[in-house]
Length: 412
Image (tube, rainbow, N blue to C red; front, side):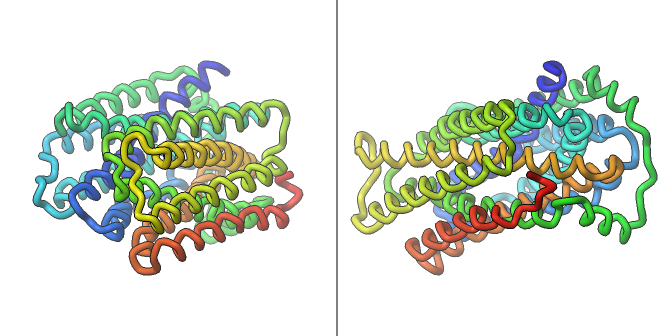
């Protein structure tokens, strides 16, 4: 079991690198160059390949071992990073990303999305019901750690390391991970033991997916549970930047510091689940705590906006802002781990030939919910104003708590 979890941890860590690169590093660099919140938000459109995972999930389900898909997609990510290393960074006077860099980042997301389907397929097949809590803790913690290393960690290193060296390091990391995916004894044993089953007709495929107990409710929950959190979380660091926080310091806190708190929250979630706590009853108090934390963060932001106060070095407001940032990541990590455990439990109720596609469906909807507000948050703030925008985020954060009352007994 330990070897299984260690292999999953290493692979989920490298899977988080593209997300951290584009959610942590890229927005800060674009904002420093003077782009509007709307244009910074629209750069997240590079995540689009993640929304089409359902196109190749049936192939991973039925066309060859998931281990092969995992190793090849991870190696492809190493090649794309090597190509990115050959490109110069955007010049100071340039608006937005160079076209070549944008295309390669799009290809990076294509490879990462294929890798995600293959790795999630292996996780669904590898984990026993009693291992769902620890397994999903490893998944969430390792993914967030990889995102932090590529986001906050790289942002702190940008003044020291060159653009080519940063992407060469990422390329080497991916190639080593591809070797691990190919050579891991646990993954080889799984590949040999899994029979290849014929894919159902596409129309019957969708019908079979939706017929899995709890799927419709789970789809609605994962689509909405992160809306308010993601909208506020994508804007709050940028608004602190506007109020005097330095980009390297904010990148470090919003990357390494905040993710350390997120890891602590995820670990707490895993510990509670390991002590035979059911994920569904655990969600209600966690979502309520997250709502209270977001309300406090919103009140602080309104105070800064109303008074035009700076969060420069040595101010008490800066400490409160960073504390609020870390608290939301702690609660976000806790709710994510519990939710992913519930998602995997739902997918294990599906037929083995549908599990990758079923989990990809839920994961795609989960990502869609996060991207929707993460992409549009800047446009909402620019058009509606700060106060109506964050009031909307608060209302959206209250919806999942109410929605829990409609949960089916199959997931209890």
